[in-house]
Structures are given as structure tokens and as C-alpha cells.
Amino acid sequence: MSSPNGDLLEGFSERVDVMPGVWFLPRFAEPESLNSDLADVVARAPVRQMKTPRGFLMGVAMSNCGQCGWVSDRRGYRYAEHDPDSGEPWPEMPRSFSLVALAAAKACGFDAFAPDVCLINRYAVGKGMGAHQDRDEQDLEQPIVSISLGLPARFFMVGPERRGRSIPIDVADGDVVVFGGPARLHYHGVRPLKPGDHAVHGASRWNLTFRCARSLQPVAP
DNA sequence: AAGTGACG
DNA sequence: GGCT
Image (cartoon, rainbow, N blue to C red):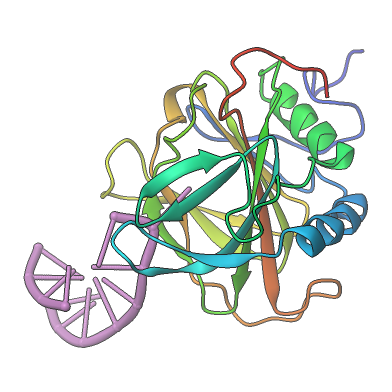
């Protein structure tokens, strides 16, 4: 298929190259099926505020789906096969999640993205996340795919050092950010959420981040 | 410090 | 950049 957007899937808008290894895909995801499946997942594994290793309560409420889930407590950051709140395995990753994550990664040149984890972050008004790295995954060859749902927010990407100038990326419902390769370990964060009222999610922003935490080999979606 | 926030 |  020949089009101005050669390596993008047909029917989608543009791909913005933010910096080497960071791409912004405005309105790439169709929120409706994601919203429905998200509701099912968080009904089984409700979001909760985890503690940092130093004992501070994180502002953002989190859950997971997939083969394991990212957790934080006084023992540190890690991936766990079970939800520590319920003792149950994390809910299975919905097909709608893995399909859009795969397509977004492919649009950025990652042809075999097979995430085994989706970390679910819910931002309430006033909540944000300071600059941090996603470095707890085994497979750093694979990118991080981040899907925004609900209220808009300002994501920021710094670089390999925690401090320094950041590049803002304003993300809204259905937007996708992909970062990998030279940016896979870049520090990044989210500015505190401004008040608003989204038709579906009310005064919240949801973020779905897909990672290859343990799978070192591709798995069919 | 995946924290918050005053100050410049 | 300091503080906790």
C-alpha cells in the first residue's frame, strides 16, 4: 500500500517524531472498546495507591493486567504474578488492549511487540508523576507503549539524566506515545492533572502502559 | 524519591 | 536546588 504515511496503518493520522526513539501518535487508539475492557479489568483488580520503597504513598492509583504486574512496596519495585491485594492472578490482558498496542508499536518500527504486562494508572485531578525510568523489565529491546484515556494531561520526556530540560507532550483521549531504542530508559513523567470532566471518565485520566517485562520472545496476541 | 513544593 |  502506498501512501504518504508509508509505514503507518491505513486510516490513521500522523506520527510525530518527538526525539530519537520517541513517537507521538495522536488519536491512534479508538477508546470505546478499550474503555469497556478497562472497566472489566479494574472490576476484578481495582486500582490502588501503592507505596514507594521509602514508604511514601504514590499519588497515582494503579492496577495491572497480563501475565504479571508492576508493583511497589517497601521491598522495592518489581513484577509480580499475583495481585498483592487479592492474591489472585492479574486479569488477562484484553484482546483490544494487545491489538492496539501491537499496532502502535508496529507503526513505530517495532514489528514483534508482544507485551506481557499492561500497567494501568489512574490520575485524579491534581495527581501527577515525577520523572522516573521504566527499568524493571527484562526485555529492554522492546518499547513502552502508552495509551491515554479520559482527561488530557501534559506528559514530559527528559532524557537519560533525571534532570534537565524536558520536552512536553500534551496527550488526550486516544493518543498514544511510544518510546524505545535510544529512549527506552529515558526519564519521563506526567504533570499534575488539571480539573475537567470527561464524558466517559469524569474527572480522571487513565493511562495504559504496555511492557515486555518477562517475555523475551514474541507471543501471538 | 514512580515525593512535594517554595522560590527565582 | 533544598528538603524530608
